[in-house]
Length: 97
Image (cartoon, rainbow, N blue to C red):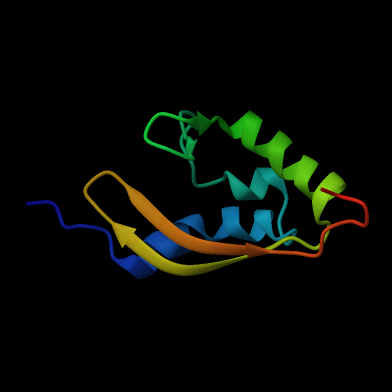
């Protein structure tokens, strides 16, 4: 039987992406461990592709919160999924609503 990935291994796999969210890594570094069909889900059916995610994160950093920082609080590993419970914080740019 195939063993499940550990929480530690799963976090190490996704950490470059969270480093990118926090401005500590490039987009290329963020997706080095991801498959071409990687998706970021915001609901059961709503998701962004890698390209859309890179654009959205760039927009957040440029127009909303340049000091955006993401922390991983929990990692859940299932047969084919890694679920991250994280928290983002940052200082909104003056005048942003």
